[in-house]
Amino acid sequence: MRNDKQGRTSKLNSWNCFRLLQSAICNRKEIADKSYEEILKVRQENQSQFLTLLCWAEKQSIAFKSKLGGAFTYLKNNEKYLRRYLEDGRLEIDNNRAERSIKPL
Image (tube, rainbow, N blue to C red):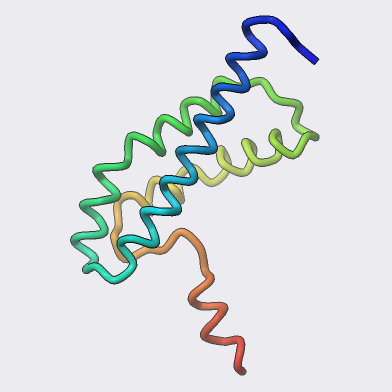
């Protein structure tokens, strides 16, 4: 366990990362009934949050085998899809809606 200033900064950054993700998820719920153009506008306004998250993840040196390391690797490997999501208001961040629609079958 690290007690130095760098360790505390790392925890603070982890918290900021969590807050960015939380705000993105809340935004998704708020804009669910809006048009594609309105959704795109909101995404573009909040695009800097996602880009900040990507930059922060790039700077971290986390053990690959840890859960956080796996999450960062997943984020880095899917960066192009995340960027595409930010550019198109028709795309959804997950496939929950599709899964719910085929569940009764």
